[in-house]
Structure formats: structure tokens, C-alpha cells
Image (cartoon, rainbow, N blue to C red):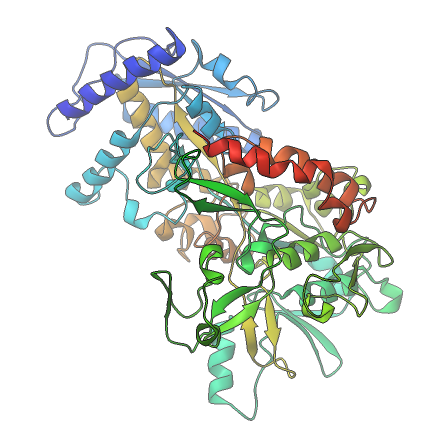
Amino acid sequence: MKKRLCCLLAAILTGAAALGTMSGCGKGSDIEFDDEGNVIPSDTTTVINFWGWADKYEEDAFNILVENFNKKYEGVIRVNYTPKSSSGYNDNFVANMIGGPDVAYAAENYFKRYVDQGALYDITSFYEESVAAWETSGGTSGLDEADMLPYTVNRYRYDPETATSEADDPLYGIAKDLAPTAIYYNEKFFKAAGITIVSEPEEEIAAWNAAHPSDKKKIMAFYEEDGKYYFNNAVAMSWQECIDLARLLQTPVSQGGGGADYGFFSEWWFNYGWSVGGDCIEYIPTDDAQFNGGYYQFTLNDATKNYIVKDDAQPIEVNGNHYAAGEIVSYLDKGALTDQQKQSCNELPSQREAFTEFVRLSQGTDQVVDNVKGVYDSVEDFYGADGNGDLKGYAVAPNPNEMSENKNSYFSSGKVAMLVSTASVQRQFSENMRGENTYNVAPMLVYKEYSADGTEVLVHGAEAAHSGSVVIVMNANTRYPNASWLFMEYIASKEGQTIQAQQGFACPYYRSLAGDPEGVFLNSKYAAENAVVFAQATEYETPGDWWYLKDKRWIDDWSGVLNTDVRNGKMSLTEFYVCPEYLATQQLLDAYTKK
């Protein structure tokens, strides 16, 4: 423990040199630990200040959390909690840390920039000792890293030189919570369309079909059978199922539909691209002396097909990397696949095809979203293209111009039947949706191809989507790093995660809490009936593209055009890919890792 205190002093001096004589505005002296890591009693109480933006639900949760912490450390540490407005919080973060809080919220899309500016404390040694304490104490103190869900810790690691977030990079914060995404659906529209909702996991259907070859069940999420419609909320829809269901839900009731204004809405492309192994940027290692080990390639419209190892195939090795059944071959390795290795894989759509599918959602059915002549030898090889290479809109989602309110209000007010959103809005929907406006949730989309009778999945992509998160950080120049860490550790502890989950807006990031059938998350009075979907999603969902690099400069210009002219139907993707904002992106990306 003495070693840790020496490291802390060195870190404080380093931070002070970077930002001047900043300090948190608490009072007293920092707490000290004995050789066993216990807090040494003191005659004074160390006071630390904690800031975070919050709505009324989150403020309630953190008032409880702070009160419990203060009781636990009464006479030793006291936390003063100050809720802040989110307006201007991120832009003024570094300035506000001067003489400001010891511990604070930070947005995950800004925290890397704050590291570059010297505003955040490197908490790596604190975290490592906490994990070690859990293991040596038998679970009576510290953090249980083995029980933490993926992408909880590494999303807040960052190396400014390489712009990477690898497992051995420094840690600058701890997740406040996770906010996995799923598809919310309004049961009123399903009822109006005569859709029967069932909940039968895919593995149970597969087992039934294997045991009953002459009486197989459909393994689809949405299907028609004997003139009736069915929706299985335990199975991920394919792209085509989503469109078919959305069209039925927005068909007028007089014509046998659900009567919604729109059938589906998602503001994020991630689920489409990641499900087939695509992404908007890919990291390319290089020996080029002008870069720090590698650079980022802009791949939003990458047209090269992706590959996934077949479920019944033996593992393959490409460039020294091993891929087991059900794993998608990486961007760097797919070009090195031999013809023989491709026989062990199923072909998946490209990132460009996936991105096009997303953009088609809000376009009119007479609007040409893209023309793909020349992309492949045959235009029919491009997902959804007609014989002329045209891809027209689906008209199942509102475009940005049509949304006069935020997406969550758009759903709760009954204007859209299905919405992609995070677990954090369950409480809002539980309190605001009444009468026939009842909601539930279903898994995110997965690319799939079915057998003709719908009883077998012939080709599938991977489960993939994004989860939101907010990071809890320490002021680089706090005078109370030990006390500040104890509070951060408490937020990240199972007790702290449970308190947040009880308030119905956060998914705890421990497997034992998130997926426990008897646990607080799944049994909160605000939880969706099928909230287990969120717990399952935490195993694979990752941060959005705004988190990739230290800031969003590389995103802002092209996404501005995408979310206005393109999604509003004023510009085709063909035009988008050659517009100045798009073409300038690679140069912006190169700057992040140049020496």
C-alpha cells in the first residue's frame, strides 16, 4: 500500500505540471491506508466533491448511493453531491475541473480528449489493487473483475500516442453503468394487426426441430402460418423480417395492419454493419515512420464481402489468427482467405450493403438511395438491389425532418411501433405509457438467411449493437486521490450497481446482477417483461463510433451530411460518397496517429 501512495504522489505532480495549480475543492487531508489496505482512523473528515448531470431518476439514485457511502465512512469521508445540467457540461469540463470536483461524470465520447488535456487522473494502480483485493479477501472488498461484463473496463483505457484502448493501456475512469440497446415495441399496434406474441428461445426451437423432423417449428422471429401472424420476442429478427413487420404495423387498421404512423426507427447504423463484421473505420498496423504504429482507414462504404466460419466447420487460421465456428473473419484477414478456407465460411454482406440497408429505412419507396452498378460483377450480388442496380427506400421510419420530438417521446406517444433505444428509458416508458400503450423489448437485428420453410437458419451474422455508458473520472489534481478512489470504487461495486439498477435506468455490469432471474435488474418494477434481452446484450454490445478516437472531429462533418441531406432524401448515397465532407475524412483520421 505504501508503494501505491508513492505512485499517487508522482501522478499528482505530473498532473499539476500539465494543468497548473488545479485542485479539487474539498477539505481536510486525504485518507491513509495501513499495510492491509484498511483506512487508518483520523481526527478529521475528508470531504470530496462529486459532480454529475442527471435527470430526476438518476439524481434520486445517486442521492441514495451517496447517502449510503457517507454512512459507511462516517467520520472518515464525506461526499458532497452536486447535480449539474448537461447543457454545456462537456464543452466546459476541463475549465470546470479547476478548483472543481474531485470526482465527476464524463461522457465516453469526450474522455479521451480530457486525457490529452491532462484533466484526468490515471487510476490504473487503484483499479489493479482493488481487483487483487477482491481475490485475496475472498470477495469481502475490492472489485470483482471476473464477474464484470465485457467492454466495461477497456472502454475507459487509453494510450494517447497510439490512440488505442487495449487491455494494457492506462485506465482513466470506471464505468458508471451500462445502457445496452434493444428493440422496444408497442404492443397496441401488434394487437391491432392481429399478431400473436410468443417467447421461445432459438436454441429451444432448434432442439425441437432436431427431435421432430416431420413436425418442425419456424425458427423465425416474425412469420405467417395458417393465415395468422406471429412475433417471437426471444429471437432476433433478420433485416427482411424487420421490414416486413414494420410495413404491417404501419398499414391502416382498416386494411388489417397496426395503424402506426411508422413501423420502425433506429438512429444508429452500428447494428447493421457490426452484425456482418463491418465498421466505419479499421485500424491498420504499419511500419511507416510517420505514424505511431498504425493508422485508421475510413471504411464506411467498404464493398468487400465479409466471411463467417460455418457453425459446423473446423476452425481456420489466417495470418496467424484463429477463427472458430461462428466467428467473423477480421477486416485485415478476410483478404487473405484462400478459396479452400472460404469453403469453410459463409459469405456475408459488406459494410456498404449493411450501411445502405440502414439508410433505406427512412427513404421513400420511389427514392433511389443508391445505384450500385459496377460494385460487383452482378448487381444481384448487392443485397437488395434491383436489376438496374437501384436500391430504393423502405419508407418504414421517419426521417430527421419529420421528428419534432426526441425518439423516445416519439415512441411513447404512439407514433412509431418499434424503436431502438437503451435500457435507460425503461422507467420513462413504464411511467409514461398507459392503457393500451404498453411496451416490451426484443433483441437487436441479426443478418440471416432462412430455408424456404423458415425452419432453419442457413446463414447468419453475429449478434452486434452498441451500448451506452458514462464514465466516472477523478480530477487529475485532486488533493484526495485515496478518498476519491474509494467513492469511485463504491459506484463500481456490486452494491453501487444494485442501487442504480433499483431505480430502473441502469443495467449493472456484473453478470451475476444483470442476468439473475431473481435479481434487482430483471425484477425492478420499471423493468420490461422481457428485460432479459438487455442482460443478454451486455455480453456483446460495444461502444459506438463516437468513442473510437479522442474526439469526434473525424465524424462530425460526414455524419452531419448523413443525418440531414441523406436521411432526409435530398442526397443519394452515390452522391454522399463523393461529397467534400466524406472525402476529407481520411485526412482527418490520419492526423490521430501521426507522429
